Length: 353
Ligand code: SF4
Image 1 (cartoon, rainbow, N blue to C red):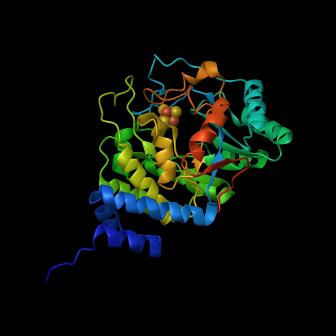
Image 2: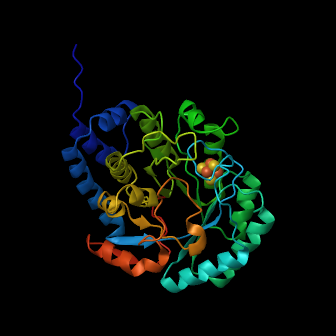
């Protein structure tokens, strides 16, 4: 008997109706995408976003406060084995000064992002979080400082951290092991995410699109995992190679597939927060606008001190001095308005619970 395969467009309709697909259906949809199908998908993704968030785009002030890292992820420009990385670590006072600037510019979320830097123990991070909260009680604090113990996550939450970003990178354990050193495992990564959820953080996860060795099956597994985790935010961006890493010669991910995955995420979790990431803006000058047109609703301009921005180089050619800089928020506003949306000054909590 001949099996009647659903057309990709039917799968999109099924996704919109059920908010989920089977693994085989995800694979079929991703593998058989076409430009026309993508345009249609983007229009549905915009409708879904507007249903819950209107045309509001939330901004987050990104403070990259340390680029020291004990890990050696094969794709990362600040991996510990890159002796060419110029290392820096902001003092707590410098972080507070970034927050002050950000607050004046209209930011109501500060994202403290760093490598897994042994210097920033709980004893140093918790007081910093408390201090920021005292000064800016109307702001949310997001942490993005990698894998830590349950107790550490708990302590930082109790100190006032509201949200935590930890990309799972790829769900598939075999694929994960080809992107990371043996000391890091997919299972440990995923456990951290479940810990963060159980503590009560608003959790963000995500993955690289087009990372080396990635297949549509891996992406299907990522979608199934995200559906199960049901996070408040999902950050995805194209893999972009860095010349001082073992993946220097690997091809970068594409804008096209990243936008397609973004729109699928919007249909699967319509209330989730979806950033148009810096990596998207790096592979295409209009990448972030295109991300918003595919259903994204968050941008994260850089609030780090100008002199260190060039050193937080996770991948080559990362944009760091143009409109993605927080000082250029007015020009960012114009760009967002040119595509019919508007930047808002608000904490911008996720509606996805
Ligand atoms: S990806 Fe994160 S954990 Fe891995 S080396 Fe880079 S900064 Fe460190």
